[in-house]
Amino acid sequence: MTDVMRIVLSPLVWLASFSAVYGLNGLLCGHGLVDAAVGSLSVQRAILVGAYGLALALQAAILVGLHMPRFASSSGFVRGVSVATGMAGFVAAAWSLMPVLTTSLC
Image 1 (cartoon, rainbow, N blue to C red):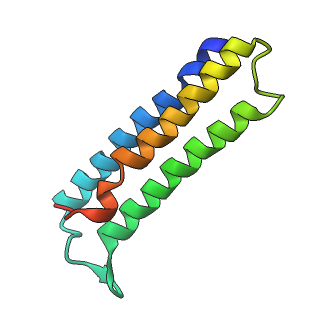
Image 2 (cartoon, rainbow, N blue to C red; image 1 turned 30 degrees about the vertical axis):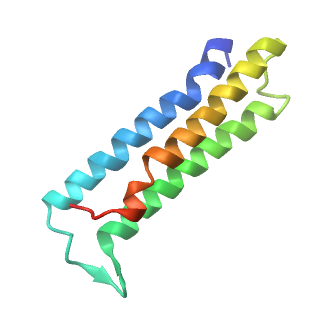
């Protein structure tokens, strides 16, 4: 893995997951799954919560991977910057995707 890829991987995954979750929300609203429910949880909310969890799991895996000697850079500066952008990507995903848990869907 190149040093540039180590630095930008987490923000790129955040960008893709943000686009995917809110695009998925639009698709689900457009296809009328708003009223479908499984127990007390709507199908749309369950799908979006799963996508939110997957996005956080990917960010956490990237952050753990950046700490492993196999994927870490030999440069201390690059290692520090890549871990910082990894943490920023995790926080950005947690914060920007949180409305799928707390707000109305459509």
